[in-house]
Length: 168
Image (cartoon, rainbow, N blue to C red; front, top):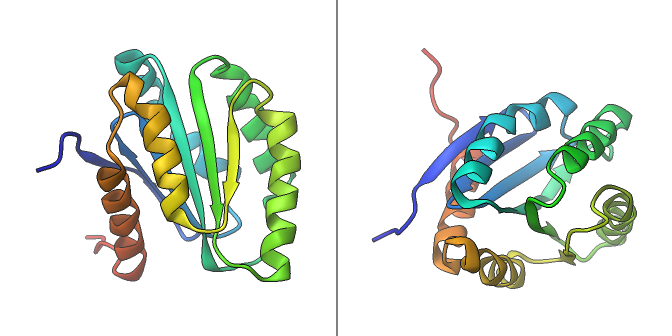
């Protein structure tokens, strides 16, 4: 039985975000927009008020396509990092795959992380399991989810991508 519930935060043609406890799990399969980042602000603020701190787990799917995040996305990412400075526990980023372009994407995102998240522990992974363990360990002090809860959340996001909810 889960200790913390899953909350869908944002869904779009490039992504699906869900909160589980004090961790925001983001699944991307194409370059996200700045608007997608803005959609998560309400959830982030509620979690900070409840837990004091939050963590980020970002997964770029192994079948992701398109360009890297654009200038507007990077600017919004920097603005949110400044806005929530001292409130973000960690950022774990998974870029699935071992191909050359996957390595290049990890290199690009490492550079972005240095600029955006100077005071936040940041780690990069090429598969979800070690990232989930690392994230759960850091979130636990603040009442965060277990590795199994984070893994179930990521699985649920993948299923939502494959079977999007019907819009009335």
